Length: 479
Image (cartoon, rainbow, N blue to C red):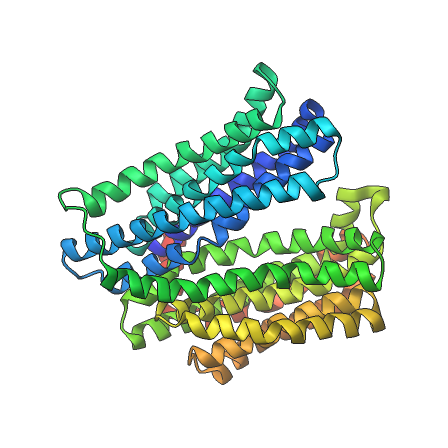
């Protein structure tokens, strides 16, 4: 059950961050004001963006160390030193770039009163300091994940996620609500979370080995990471393009009606993604045959068991959204949420072959595939959005993720035809859920529909579950 434990550890930081944000957002707005909190959110967006787009070195070192797990400790130390050296170079250049761009943004494009604008401009050096913190976090955490040290990574990341939101509140209450103080406190939270990760990386890889970065090791890391970086640049464009098209084609008021169900649906994908994160080092360290077999099993588990979640949420979309938003609910959000959930299901399945392709050393294919998909997706968004409104935009998203899923399954050589046959049951029942969901407007009818469809799918999930996973669950339930 090590995989289940590692999946839980990968999930914990995200869950902790979501829970803390739910509690702290009203407090921030009350203490600092909506405008100042908005400026702080921009800072966190930058932190989050550079956390995902760490120039690919985090994923690159995970793949490299997983693939060379049996290598001598001195060789692994050389890889880590090389990655740290590369991260230092990039962090220096990135800090300068962030400093200049944030000065340009807050000086020319940031709409706020003169006092807050001055605070933001005075804080740009703190924006720059975020870059090395994010870079070193990505590389050190990536190194530890490469040898499946998920525990300390989870502790450090969870600590950083919590403290980066809690410490600014403490500063706001006890000292000042000026943006520089809030941002500095948030940065301190990230740095505290980095300490256990750095310490563990030193103990596992570097203690007792001289500092010896190598160009021979740095070159493949940069080569692999460059394609990851391209993907990281394209992905935000894909993520934001639907809202841009909605604003242009339908109107800005419709953006909220789309974004609310989209964000909720996207949150549910974090559960299968946590399992995929735990699988990545195994995909890289195992033989091609073993990695492919593990990937096929993971596709079945994600597709069928996450399918149960999607079916339940589709059937209960209307009562859940009405409970959360009450009279503020835009009726269009209900259908949008249901369609988006289908795309999330396909995206969760695609994450397995996507990780497998990366783990086997091919980051080029996924980057080029997403680059090709981008203009096609824009055209789909515009066409379907013009024809069918918000539901058309949601349909374009779900079609893109479904096509992407098939492409990734074929490229990973997972015997896509066989897997698609095994996924027909959840796919068919998701389609039925979409068909009956307009009649599930309340809790009773929604729960009834979800229970009936889940009752049909559960036996299929159990029968088609990979043997090892089924035996492990049987042992656990019989204890």
